[in-house]
Image (cartoon, rainbow, N blue to C red; front, side):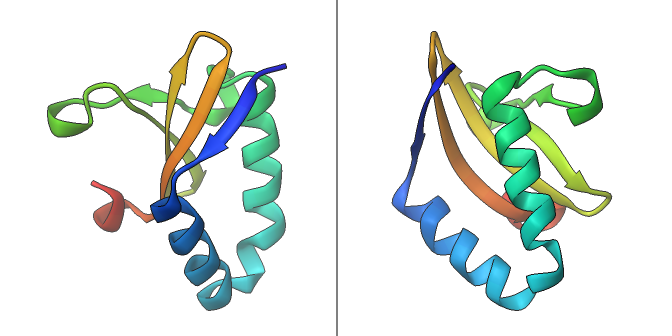
Length: 88
């Protein structure tokens, strides 16, 4: 199992995101568990990013929302969460 870390930005954005979209709370928890278990699972639609986020990956929560994270060996760090336009 991977060691999981979060950034202060992620914690703040997650809190705000769940406050605004409580209907997605369970889906977010499930996605985070799936990412921690296997970040490159096909059903997560994980993809490598480019530009200033070139060391990061993104995974879909649903059609319009994403989780941004990094993987370094057995360490996974959640970076950001939000709508497609907010995180990119």
